[in-house]
Length: 335
Image 1 (cartoon, rainbow, N blue to C red):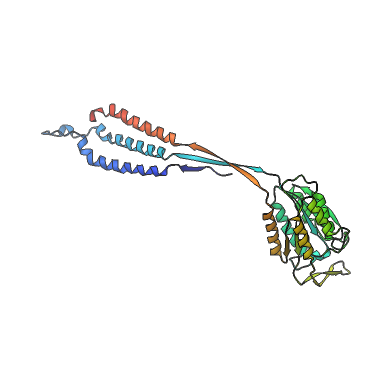
Image 2 (tube, rainbow, N blue to C red; image 1 turned 90 degrees about the vertical axis):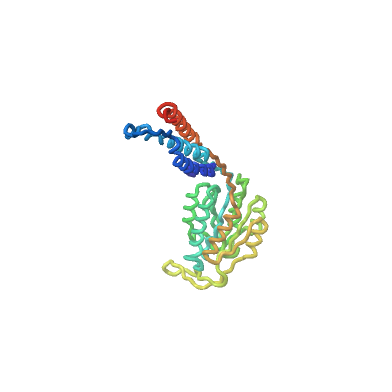
């Protein structure tokens, strides 16, 4: 909410306040001429000054006060109240398809690829207040973690709950992950846009749906795909076996991402491909997608002016009237 602001519409009018010192100077110069002089042989009868004579400068003060109030009125003081009303347009429907294969536990991003992704994805969700967002996870198969919803609390909780599990068939089924995401969007009522953010750190080696077929489905239903290849170039510390105590045994393994496939998927659907080889780059990518898929918001501003010049003009008029009344009554003999 914008606080009330006070302003003067015509501040240049304050230059007229220079009339006040000019009037004081004129009064000082002319004061001896305002009272008639009479030559007397003795001043004993006039030794005590008249009380009215001493109060006569009140007339000048009233005149100067009236000038000051009139100048302030001419400057037009007023309060400005600016209020805004936001009209939210229909948001975009976004599904994030996230690879949760064992390789997502690789430590080339800190603390690992999956945890780094969860942090950035949560921030992305919080930055999309008007959009419906859903989560699809996949490894050797895919399923919906949460359907499209405007409730960001549900989405954030779903992201926080994502973890690697051997309950899902091993491998990386990019085609199935994309197809499941498109299936969540195919009947979306959104006229603003339908978007899939497809993230993987490998190549398609599982599942029964070809990624290119899934991309064709995305085109058919007007779904744009932003794909992200996650992982460093070269080697990375990744799980290669399970120790007897149930923990993972890590070793340097080559990072193999089918970038040509991801680029093709994004190209045919009108999206873009990104490569994230560290935490900072991953965050920059999500920020870039956030900028590319902006939901338009209309904002209407209403301005209310509370004019205050009438009060000052009224006080100025009252002072002038009071001066006139005093001249014609109490101080009449001095005029």
